[in-house]
Length: 473
Length: 49
View (cartoon, rainbow over the protein chains, first blue to last red):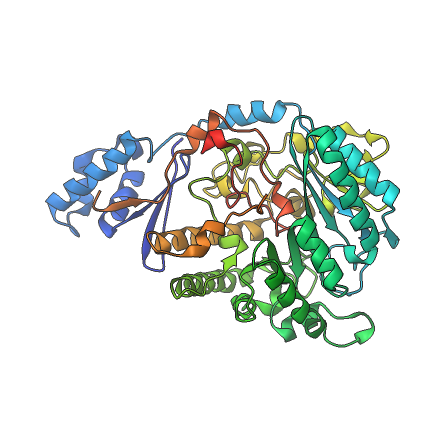
Protein backbone atom coordinates (compact mmCIF):
# COMPACT_ATOMS: atom_id res chain seq x y z
CA UNK A 1 0.00 0.00 0.00
CA UNK A 2 1.25 3.49 -0.80
CA UNK A 3 1.13 6.24 1.81
CA UNK A 4 1.42 9.99 1.59
CA UNK A 5 1.44 12.28 4.61
CA UNK A 6 1.12 15.98 3.92
CA UNK A 7 0.92 18.95 6.23
CA UNK A 8 1.39 22.70 6.35
CA UNK A 9 3.56 24.23 9.01
CA UNK A 10 5.02 27.73 9.41
CA UNK A 11 4.25 28.58 5.79
CA UNK A 12 5.80 25.43 4.32
CA UNK A 13 3.89 22.78 2.38
CA UNK A 14 5.42 19.40 3.14
CA UNK A 15 4.71 16.12 1.38
CA UNK A 16 6.15 12.92 2.82
CA UNK A 17 6.24 9.75 0.79
CA UNK A 18 6.18 7.54 3.85
CA UNK A 19 7.52 4.28 2.40
CA UNK A 20 10.53 5.69 0.57
CA UNK A 21 11.22 8.20 3.35
CA UNK A 22 11.26 10.99 0.76
CA UNK A 23 10.38 14.47 1.94
CA UNK A 24 9.33 17.17 -0.52
CA UNK A 25 8.66 20.87 -0.04
CA UNK A 26 6.09 21.92 -2.62
CA UNK A 27 4.09 24.93 -3.75
CA UNK A 28 0.36 25.27 -3.15
CA UNK A 29 -0.62 23.81 -6.51
CA UNK A 30 1.44 20.64 -6.12
CA UNK A 31 0.21 20.29 -2.55
CA UNK A 32 -3.42 20.47 -3.65
CA UNK A 33 -2.76 18.22 -6.64
CA UNK A 34 -1.23 15.49 -4.48
CA UNK A 35 -4.18 15.76 -2.12
CA UNK A 36 -6.53 15.31 -5.06
CA UNK A 37 -4.49 12.39 -6.42
CA UNK A 38 -4.65 10.65 -3.04
CA UNK A 39 -8.43 11.03 -3.00
CA UNK A 40 -8.88 9.84 -6.59
CA UNK A 41 -6.93 6.72 -7.36
CA UNK A 42 -3.47 7.40 -5.98
CA UNK A 43 -0.56 6.42 -8.18
CA UNK A 44 -2.85 5.32 -11.04
CA UNK A 45 -4.73 8.60 -11.06
CA UNK A 46 -6.62 9.98 -14.06
CA UNK A 47 -4.96 13.21 -15.15
CA UNK A 48 -8.10 14.82 -16.52
CA UNK A 49 -10.06 14.01 -13.38
CA UNK A 50 -7.45 15.58 -11.10
CA UNK A 51 -7.09 18.56 -13.41
CA UNK A 52 -10.82 19.20 -13.32
CA UNK A 53 -10.72 19.28 -9.54
CA UNK A 54 -8.09 22.03 -9.55
CA UNK A 55 -9.29 24.25 -12.41
CA UNK A 56 -11.35 26.46 -10.12
CA UNK A 57 -8.14 27.54 -8.37
CA UNK A 58 -5.28 27.26 -10.90
CA UNK A 59 -4.73 27.84 -14.66
CA UNK A 60 -4.78 24.70 -16.82
CA UNK A 61 -1.19 24.96 -18.12
CA UNK A 62 0.17 25.33 -14.61
CA UNK A 63 -1.74 22.26 -13.48
CA UNK A 64 -0.28 20.29 -16.39
CA UNK A 65 3.25 21.40 -15.47
CA UNK A 66 2.70 20.47 -11.82
CA UNK A 67 1.39 17.02 -12.72
CA UNK A 68 4.45 16.48 -14.92
CA UNK A 69 6.72 17.15 -11.94
CA UNK A 70 4.64 14.82 -9.77
CA UNK A 71 4.90 12.08 -12.41
CA UNK A 72 8.68 12.49 -12.45
CA UNK A 73 8.82 11.82 -8.72
CA UNK A 74 6.60 8.76 -9.13
CA UNK A 75 8.90 7.45 -11.90
CA UNK A 76 11.95 8.00 -9.69
CA UNK A 77 10.42 6.01 -6.82
CA UNK A 78 10.07 9.07 -4.60
CA UNK A 79 6.30 9.33 -4.45
CA UNK A 80 3.52 6.76 -4.05
CA UNK A 81 5.96 3.94 -3.29
CA UNK A 82 4.80 0.67 -1.77
CA UNK A 83 5.52 -0.66 1.72
CA UNK A 84 7.57 -3.74 0.90
CA UNK A 85 9.28 -4.09 4.24
CA UNK A 86 7.04 -6.35 6.31
CA UNK A 87 8.60 -9.71 5.40
CA UNK A 88 12.07 -8.17 5.48
CA UNK A 89 11.58 -6.92 9.04
CA UNK A 90 10.00 -10.14 10.29
CA UNK A 91 12.97 -12.11 8.85
CA UNK A 92 15.38 -9.54 10.26
CA UNK A 93 13.91 -9.87 13.73
CA UNK A 94 14.18 -13.66 13.58
CA UNK A 95 17.97 -13.39 13.34
CA UNK A 96 20.04 -14.24 16.37
CA UNK A 97 20.30 -11.10 18.44
CA UNK A 98 23.28 -9.89 20.39
CA UNK A 99 23.48 -7.57 23.36
CA UNK A 100 25.15 -4.28 22.51
CA UNK A 101 24.07 -1.86 25.21
CA UNK A 102 23.60 -1.92 28.96
CA UNK A 103 22.00 0.57 31.28
CA UNK A 104 23.90 0.05 34.52
CA UNK A 105 21.96 1.03 37.61
CA UNK A 106 25.06 2.04 39.49
CA UNK A 107 23.07 3.45 42.41
CA UNK A 108 19.53 2.79 43.49
CA UNK A 109 19.69 5.86 45.62
CA UNK A 110 19.33 9.54 44.91
CA UNK A 111 20.15 12.89 46.49
CA UNK A 112 17.11 14.62 44.99
CA UNK A 113 13.44 13.80 45.53
CA UNK A 114 11.92 14.43 42.11
CA UNK A 115 8.16 14.09 42.24
CA UNK A 116 7.77 12.35 38.87
CA UNK A 117 10.70 9.93 39.19
CA UNK A 118 9.84 6.58 37.56
CA UNK A 119 12.64 5.17 39.71
CA UNK A 120 10.67 6.15 42.82
CA UNK A 121 13.37 8.54 43.99
CA UNK A 122 16.01 6.06 43.00
CA UNK A 123 14.71 2.95 44.69
CA UNK A 124 12.77 1.28 41.85
CA UNK A 125 10.16 -0.37 44.07
CA UNK A 126 12.95 -1.96 46.05
CA UNK A 127 15.68 -1.20 48.53
CA UNK A 128 18.42 1.40 48.38
CA UNK A 129 21.58 -0.16 46.99
CA UNK A 130 24.86 0.61 45.27
CA UNK A 131 26.30 -1.64 42.58
CA UNK A 132 29.48 -3.34 43.68
CA UNK A 133 32.54 -3.36 41.46
CA UNK A 134 32.24 -7.13 41.20
CA UNK A 135 28.67 -6.96 39.84
CA UNK A 136 29.67 -4.16 37.46
CA UNK A 137 32.59 -6.16 36.08
CA UNK A 138 30.36 -9.19 35.61
CA UNK A 139 27.93 -6.98 33.70
CA UNK A 140 30.67 -5.82 31.32
CA UNK A 141 31.88 -9.42 30.92
CA UNK A 142 28.30 -10.43 30.10
CA UNK A 143 28.06 -7.64 27.53
CA UNK A 144 31.30 -8.56 25.80
CA UNK A 145 30.45 -12.28 25.84
CA UNK A 146 27.01 -11.70 24.31
CA UNK A 147 27.87 -9.00 21.77
CA UNK A 148 28.88 -11.28 18.89
CA UNK A 149 30.66 -9.35 16.14
CA UNK A 150 29.44 -5.91 17.23
CA UNK A 151 32.35 -3.59 17.80
CA UNK A 152 30.65 -0.61 19.42
CA UNK A 153 29.24 -1.36 22.86
CA UNK A 154 27.31 1.18 24.88
CA UNK A 155 27.18 1.46 28.64
CA UNK A 156 25.13 4.11 30.39
CA UNK A 157 25.83 4.82 34.04
CA UNK A 158 22.37 5.45 35.35
CA UNK A 159 20.53 5.48 38.63
CA UNK A 160 19.18 6.78 40.88
CA UNK A 161 22.16 9.05 40.87
CA UNK A 162 25.33 7.35 39.59
CA UNK A 163 27.75 9.88 41.08
CA UNK A 164 26.72 8.53 44.52
CA UNK A 165 28.80 5.48 43.57
CA UNK A 166 31.49 7.33 41.64
CA UNK A 167 34.51 5.18 42.50
CA UNK A 168 32.78 2.17 40.97
CA UNK A 169 31.99 4.16 37.82
CA UNK A 170 35.67 5.04 37.42
CA UNK A 171 36.83 1.49 38.04
CA UNK A 172 34.31 0.09 35.58
CA UNK A 173 35.47 2.48 32.85
CA UNK A 174 39.03 1.32 33.51
CA UNK A 175 37.93 -2.31 33.38
CA UNK A 176 35.94 -1.74 30.19
CA UNK A 177 38.93 -0.13 28.49
CA UNK A 178 41.04 -3.16 29.44
CA UNK A 179 38.60 -5.39 27.54
CA UNK A 180 38.66 -3.36 24.31
CA UNK A 181 41.83 -4.59 22.66
CA UNK A 182 41.65 -8.28 23.60
CA UNK A 183 38.05 -8.56 22.39
CA UNK A 184 38.11 -6.01 19.54
CA UNK A 185 35.43 -3.86 21.17
CA UNK A 186 35.00 -0.16 21.63
CA UNK A 187 33.03 1.07 24.62
CA UNK A 188 30.98 4.22 24.50
CA UNK A 189 30.31 5.23 28.06
CA UNK A 190 27.64 7.74 28.99
CA UNK A 191 26.52 9.21 32.30
CA UNK A 192 23.12 10.51 33.35
CA UNK A 193 23.39 12.80 36.35
CA UNK A 194 21.38 15.30 38.36
CA UNK A 195 24.54 17.33 38.96
CA UNK A 196 24.33 17.66 42.74
CA UNK A 197 27.71 15.98 43.33
CA UNK A 198 29.33 17.21 40.13
CA UNK A 199 32.82 18.59 40.70
CA UNK A 200 35.98 19.30 38.70
CA UNK A 201 37.32 15.79 39.10
CA UNK A 202 34.10 14.21 37.81
CA UNK A 203 33.91 16.65 34.89
CA UNK A 204 37.52 16.01 33.87
CA UNK A 205 36.99 12.25 34.05
CA UNK A 206 33.81 12.48 31.98
CA UNK A 207 35.46 14.69 29.40
CA UNK A 208 38.14 12.05 28.97
CA UNK A 209 35.97 8.96 29.03
CA UNK A 210 32.29 9.65 28.39
CA UNK A 211 31.07 9.98 24.81
CA UNK A 212 27.93 11.71 26.07
CA UNK A 213 26.58 13.06 29.33
CA UNK A 214 22.93 13.68 30.11
CA UNK A 215 22.40 16.50 32.59
CA UNK A 216 19.01 16.51 34.26
CA UNK A 217 17.38 19.92 34.68
CA UNK A 218 13.81 20.95 33.92
CA UNK A 219 14.13 24.57 32.85
CA UNK A 220 13.17 27.75 34.63
CA UNK A 221 14.00 27.90 38.34
CA UNK A 222 10.40 27.71 39.56
CA UNK A 223 9.59 24.86 37.18
CA UNK A 224 12.70 22.90 38.08
CA UNK A 225 12.44 23.35 41.82
CA UNK A 226 8.75 22.45 41.93
CA UNK A 227 9.37 18.99 40.46
CA UNK A 228 13.01 18.47 41.46
CA UNK A 229 13.21 19.47 45.14
CA UNK A 230 16.25 18.83 47.27
CA UNK A 231 15.87 16.31 50.04
CA UNK A 232 14.82 17.88 53.33
CA UNK A 233 14.24 21.22 51.62
CA UNK A 234 17.92 22.17 51.46
CA UNK A 235 17.54 25.08 49.07
CA UNK A 236 16.97 25.32 45.35
CA UNK A 237 18.34 22.45 43.27
CA UNK A 238 18.41 24.85 40.30
CA UNK A 239 20.81 27.16 42.12
CA UNK A 240 23.10 24.27 43.04
CA UNK A 241 23.11 22.66 39.63
CA UNK A 242 22.94 25.31 36.92
CA UNK A 243 26.41 26.85 37.41
CA UNK A 244 27.95 23.37 37.41
CA UNK A 245 26.14 22.34 34.24
CA UNK A 246 27.14 25.56 32.51
CA UNK A 247 30.77 24.92 33.37
CA UNK A 248 30.48 21.27 32.33
CA UNK A 249 28.92 22.13 28.95
CA UNK A 250 31.62 24.69 28.24
CA UNK A 251 34.35 22.24 29.24
CA UNK A 252 32.96 19.84 26.62
CA UNK A 253 33.05 22.60 24.00
CA UNK A 254 29.25 22.61 23.93
CA UNK A 255 29.23 19.17 22.34
CA UNK A 256 28.41 15.59 23.32
CA UNK A 257 26.03 16.41 26.13
CA UNK A 258 22.34 17.09 26.62
CA UNK A 259 20.67 19.18 29.22
CA UNK A 260 17.59 17.06 29.62
CA UNK A 261 14.35 18.15 31.21
CA UNK A 262 10.91 16.73 31.75
CA UNK A 263 7.75 18.72 31.22
CA UNK A 264 4.47 17.95 32.93
CA UNK A 265 0.88 19.14 33.07
CA UNK A 266 2.18 21.86 35.37
CA UNK A 267 4.43 23.50 32.76
CA UNK A 268 2.69 23.06 29.45
CA UNK A 269 4.49 26.21 28.29
CA UNK A 270 7.66 24.12 28.13
CA UNK A 271 8.98 25.96 25.07
CA UNK A 272 9.88 28.69 27.54
CA UNK A 273 11.97 26.16 29.46
CA UNK A 274 13.82 25.07 26.34
CA UNK A 275 14.47 28.70 25.45
CA UNK A 276 15.58 29.30 29.02
CA UNK A 277 18.21 26.60 28.49
CA UNK A 278 19.34 28.39 25.35
CA UNK A 279 19.45 31.70 27.22
CA UNK A 280 21.64 30.05 29.86
CA UNK A 281 24.11 29.21 27.09
CA UNK A 282 23.27 25.54 26.56
CA UNK A 283 23.24 24.47 22.93
CA UNK A 284 22.31 20.77 23.29
CA UNK A 285 19.03 20.07 24.98
CA UNK A 286 16.06 17.80 25.31
CA UNK A 287 12.76 18.28 27.09
CA UNK A 288 10.60 15.20 27.29
CA UNK A 289 6.98 14.77 28.27
CA UNK A 290 6.52 13.10 31.65
CA UNK A 291 5.11 9.60 31.60
CA UNK A 292 2.90 9.27 34.65
CA UNK A 293 -0.20 7.47 35.81
CA UNK A 294 -3.40 9.31 34.89
CA UNK A 295 -4.20 9.91 38.57
CA UNK A 296 -0.98 11.85 39.14
CA UNK A 297 -1.80 15.57 39.23
CA UNK A 298 1.12 16.40 36.95
CA UNK A 299 0.27 13.71 34.33
CA UNK A 300 -0.24 14.88 30.77
CA UNK A 301 -3.86 14.52 29.74
CA UNK A 302 -5.50 14.26 26.38
CA UNK A 303 -6.95 17.76 26.74
CA UNK A 304 -3.39 19.12 27.11
CA UNK A 305 -2.45 18.02 23.61
CA UNK A 306 -3.58 21.12 21.64
CA UNK A 307 -1.52 23.35 23.94
CA UNK A 308 1.47 21.00 23.75
CA UNK A 309 1.33 20.95 19.96
CA UNK A 310 1.19 24.76 19.92
CA UNK A 311 4.26 24.83 22.14
CA UNK A 312 6.19 22.56 19.80
CA UNK A 313 5.25 24.90 16.95
CA UNK A 314 6.35 27.94 18.96
CA UNK A 315 9.63 26.28 19.84
CA UNK A 316 10.23 25.21 16.25
CA UNK A 317 9.68 28.74 14.93
CA UNK A 318 12.10 30.15 17.50
CA UNK A 319 14.55 27.35 16.72
CA UNK A 320 14.63 28.40 13.07
CA UNK A 321 14.84 32.09 13.94
CA UNK A 322 17.76 31.66 16.31
CA UNK A 323 19.58 29.34 13.95
CA UNK A 324 19.32 31.91 11.18
CA UNK A 325 20.57 34.58 13.57
CA UNK A 326 23.66 32.50 14.34
CA UNK A 327 22.66 31.65 17.91
CA UNK A 328 21.13 28.27 17.28
CA UNK A 329 20.70 25.30 19.55
CA UNK A 330 19.88 21.63 19.10
CA UNK A 331 16.65 20.28 20.51
CA UNK A 332 16.83 16.48 20.67
CA UNK A 333 13.36 15.84 19.30
CA UNK A 334 13.77 18.28 16.43
CA UNK A 335 16.93 16.60 15.24
CA UNK A 336 16.30 14.44 12.23
CA UNK A 337 18.72 13.05 9.70
CA UNK A 338 17.07 12.99 6.30
CA UNK A 339 20.15 11.87 4.39
CA UNK A 340 22.34 9.62 6.53
CA UNK A 341 19.77 8.41 8.98
CA UNK A 342 19.32 4.83 10.04
CA UNK A 343 18.55 1.99 7.65
CA UNK A 344 15.02 0.70 7.32
CA UNK A 345 15.82 -2.34 9.49
CA UNK A 346 16.72 -0.05 12.37
CA UNK A 347 13.73 2.18 11.76
CA UNK A 348 11.15 -0.59 11.88
CA UNK A 349 12.55 -3.09 14.31
CA UNK A 350 11.93 -1.25 17.58
CA UNK A 351 14.19 0.16 20.25
CA UNK A 352 15.99 -3.10 21.06
CA UNK A 353 14.83 -3.32 24.66
CA UNK A 354 14.86 -6.85 26.01
CA UNK A 355 17.19 -8.05 23.30
CA UNK A 356 20.10 -5.80 22.40
CA UNK A 357 19.56 -3.33 25.22
CA UNK A 358 19.22 -4.46 28.83
CA UNK A 359 19.19 -2.82 32.25
CA UNK A 360 21.26 -4.18 35.15
CA UNK A 361 20.26 -3.60 38.77
CA UNK A 362 22.82 -2.98 41.55
CA UNK A 363 22.68 -6.67 42.47
CA UNK A 364 23.07 -7.85 38.87
CA UNK A 365 19.51 -8.66 37.79
CA UNK A 366 18.71 -8.13 34.13
CA UNK A 367 15.56 -6.38 32.89
CA UNK A 368 14.43 -5.42 29.35
CA UNK A 369 15.15 -1.76 30.05
CA UNK A 370 15.47 0.75 32.89
CA UNK A 371 11.72 1.37 32.93
CA UNK A 372 10.90 -2.29 33.64
CA UNK A 373 13.31 -2.54 36.56
CA UNK A 374 11.54 -3.69 39.70
CA UNK A 375 8.69 -5.44 37.88
CA UNK A 376 9.36 -9.11 38.61
CA UNK A 377 7.26 -10.22 35.64
CA UNK A 378 10.06 -8.87 33.45
CA UNK A 379 13.06 -10.23 35.35
CA UNK A 380 15.14 -11.82 32.59
CA UNK A 381 18.03 -13.31 34.52
CA UNK A 382 21.23 -11.98 35.99
CA UNK A 383 24.81 -11.18 35.03
CA UNK A 384 26.08 -14.43 36.57
CA UNK A 385 23.74 -16.89 34.86
CA UNK A 386 22.77 -14.80 31.84
CA UNK A 387 19.23 -14.84 30.41
CA UNK A 388 17.30 -17.48 32.34
CA UNK A 389 13.84 -16.57 31.05
CA UNK A 390 14.34 -16.44 27.28
CA UNK A 391 10.59 -16.44 26.70
CA UNK A 392 10.52 -12.79 27.82
CA UNK A 393 13.33 -11.86 25.44
CA UNK A 394 11.52 -13.71 22.66
CA UNK A 395 8.45 -11.57 23.19
CA UNK A 396 10.54 -8.41 22.87
CA UNK A 397 12.37 -9.88 19.89
CA UNK A 398 9.14 -10.15 17.94
CA UNK A 399 8.09 -6.64 18.90
CA UNK A 400 8.31 -4.47 15.79
CA UNK A 401 6.24 -1.92 13.92
CA UNK A 402 4.24 -4.55 12.05
CA UNK A 403 3.36 -6.36 15.27
CA UNK A 404 1.57 -3.21 16.45
CA UNK A 405 -1.86 -2.55 15.05
CA UNK A 406 -1.66 1.18 15.76
CA UNK A 407 1.73 1.58 14.07
CA UNK A 408 1.29 -0.35 10.83
CA UNK A 409 -0.29 2.51 8.95
CA UNK A 410 1.10 5.45 10.92
CA UNK A 411 3.26 7.88 8.94
CA UNK A 412 5.61 8.26 11.92
CA UNK A 413 6.59 4.58 12.09
CA UNK A 414 9.90 5.16 10.28
CA UNK A 415 10.92 7.79 12.84
CA UNK A 416 9.77 6.41 16.19
CA UNK A 417 10.17 2.70 15.44
CA UNK A 418 6.92 1.84 17.16
CA UNK A 419 7.50 3.86 20.29
CA UNK A 420 8.47 2.88 23.80
CA UNK A 421 7.55 -0.66 24.90
CA UNK A 422 7.53 0.37 28.55
CA UNK A 423 5.08 3.19 27.93
CA UNK A 424 2.88 0.84 25.94
CA UNK A 425 2.91 -1.66 28.80
CA UNK A 426 2.22 1.00 31.38
CA UNK A 427 -0.94 2.16 29.64
CA UNK A 428 -2.17 -1.00 27.91
CA UNK A 429 -0.47 -3.93 29.71
CA UNK A 430 0.99 -5.01 26.38
CA UNK A 431 4.32 -4.18 24.78
CA UNK A 432 2.70 -4.41 21.35
CA UNK A 433 0.37 -1.48 21.82
CA UNK A 434 1.23 2.23 21.87
CA UNK A 435 0.94 5.09 24.36
CA UNK A 436 -1.62 7.19 22.50
CA UNK A 437 -0.88 10.59 24.03
CA UNK A 438 2.81 10.00 23.33
CA UNK A 439 1.99 9.20 19.70
CA UNK A 440 0.27 12.54 19.15
CA UNK A 441 3.29 14.37 20.55
CA UNK A 442 5.74 12.25 18.58
CA UNK A 443 3.94 12.96 15.31
CA UNK A 444 3.90 16.66 16.03
CA UNK A 445 7.62 16.69 16.79
CA UNK A 446 8.37 14.92 13.53
CA UNK A 447 6.36 17.47 11.59
CA UNK A 448 8.18 20.29 13.35
CA UNK A 449 11.55 18.67 12.69
CA UNK A 450 10.80 18.38 8.99
CA UNK A 451 9.51 21.95 8.81
CA UNK A 452 12.82 23.05 10.34
CA UNK A 453 14.72 21.15 7.65
CA UNK A 454 12.62 22.90 5.02
CA UNK A 455 13.22 26.29 6.59
CA UNK A 456 16.96 25.79 6.87
CA UNK A 457 17.48 24.10 3.50
CA UNK A 458 20.18 26.04 1.69
CA UNK A 459 20.96 28.15 4.75
CA UNK A 460 24.50 28.26 6.05
CA UNK A 461 23.86 27.06 9.60
CA UNK A 462 27.09 25.60 10.93
CA UNK A 463 25.56 23.68 13.83
CA UNK A 464 23.76 21.35 11.49
CA UNK A 465 26.94 19.36 10.87
CA UNK A 466 26.87 18.24 14.49
CA UNK A 467 23.19 17.42 14.67
CA UNK A 468 23.59 13.69 14.69
CA UNK A 469 26.99 13.58 16.24
CA UNK A 470 27.81 10.40 18.12
CA UNK A 471 30.94 11.82 19.63
CA UNK A 472 34.35 12.34 18.14
CA UNK A 473 35.80 8.88 18.20
CA UNK B 1 11.94 21.11 -10.79
CA UNK B 2 10.29 24.46 -10.22
CA UNK B 3 7.55 23.54 -7.84
CA UNK B 4 9.09 20.74 -5.80
CA UNK B 5 12.20 20.72 -3.66
CA UNK B 6 13.22 17.30 -2.36
CA UNK B 7 15.01 17.36 1.00
CA UNK B 8 16.06 13.72 1.03
CA UNK B 9 18.83 12.30 -1.09
CA UNK B 10 17.99 8.60 -1.14
CA UNK B 11 15.13 6.20 -0.73
CA UNK B 12 14.82 4.02 2.36
CA UNK B 13 14.52 1.04 0.04
CA UNK B 14 18.18 1.48 -0.89
CA UNK B 15 19.15 0.89 2.74
CA UNK B 16 17.79 -2.66 2.56
CA UNK B 17 20.87 -3.69 0.58
CA UNK B 18 23.39 -3.12 3.35
CA UNK B 19 21.18 -2.45 6.36
CA UNK B 20 20.82 -4.17 9.70
CA UNK B 21 24.48 -4.32 10.76
CA UNK B 22 23.49 -3.00 14.20
CA UNK B 23 26.54 -0.84 14.80
CA UNK B 24 24.36 2.21 15.34
CA UNK B 25 23.48 3.68 18.70
CA UNK B 26 20.74 2.10 20.79
CA UNK B 27 17.77 4.45 20.92
CA UNK B 28 17.58 4.87 24.67
CA UNK B 29 21.29 5.51 25.12
CA UNK B 30 20.91 9.05 23.87
CA UNK B 31 18.95 11.67 25.73
CA UNK B 32 15.48 10.33 25.95
CA UNK B 33 15.10 7.32 28.25
CA UNK B 34 11.32 7.71 28.14
CA UNK B 35 10.38 7.61 24.48
CA UNK B 36 11.69 5.99 21.34
CA UNK B 37 13.23 8.06 18.62
CA UNK B 38 15.35 6.62 15.86
CA UNK B 39 14.90 9.08 13.00
CA UNK B 40 17.55 11.40 14.36
CA UNK B 41 20.24 8.79 14.65
CA UNK B 42 23.05 8.28 12.21
CA UNK B 43 23.96 5.22 10.23
CA UNK B 44 27.45 3.97 11.03
CA UNK B 45 27.72 1.65 8.04
CA UNK B 46 29.78 3.29 5.31
CA UNK B 47 28.14 1.02 2.72
CA UNK B 48 24.82 2.72 3.36
CA UNK B 49 25.98 6.24 2.78
